[in-house]
Length: 359
Image 1 (tube, helix red, strand yellow):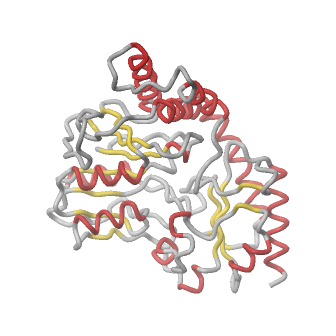
Image 2: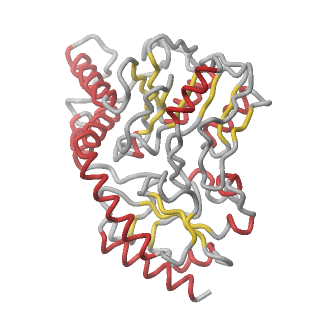
């Protein structure tokens, strides 16, 4: 895919917009679909109906017994959950996304960090400090793809008297949702929807304090005019994930098997089994990643998470696995999914392996 620019293999950074999502969005970007969904006239009510249909479609990605709040993305959703729940003491895993780590440390400078093993997994029986009010562990790590034991960790959090928040950005639409979480954050553009919209699912009975004040939209928890186009695109993408989950999973599994063979002499970062198989994070001794990326510039691959690119810092995720800074800087991430063709993966692997062997 993306023939003009080369081959796109960075599905953890973002996913291609599904044609079905684009089509439904166009209606609400047209001359007769621009109304404010919070207006009471007929065009406004039609826009509101589109928003509520999208909310129902997105709700299909979550467990029953909660409500869906639309946000500008997962970062806002996670901020609302962490800062809005009122917890004074927090515990988060060492490999969380910056949206969780930085927000948790802002809310609680003494925030407890739950370590991971060398395979990139938090222990299911990880010790939660007494007095913790909120535990946050992601479902699927965005850098190495490891799938965390979130249901067991949610039970442990509840046993300690804490709420459990799950960043399910990388797992939404691919894996079953965390059944025991109290709050779950997802992002549309990671599941073939548009950028600029996400959602926070809040279990019934959990109360939050709003971060954004104003018109009282989204049940008083997130003021601001919703975009019917973004909501509709999100909803269509979510509905597709529900209907295509089995075939998408089979396609990704076939690509994973091929990718493992194509990169057989590279070292895999993180568990081979407890991971989303659309994420291949591998390293090679003494690899100059910057040079490789330059030589393979027609390939869209990554040397880390998109939000940390250009920082110059080694991956905090790979360091949490016990890798040295030098080892962490020899890793690349290859992400694939619904629209990835096997032949594209083969061409990319040939170029990457050739560039690595020339070093």
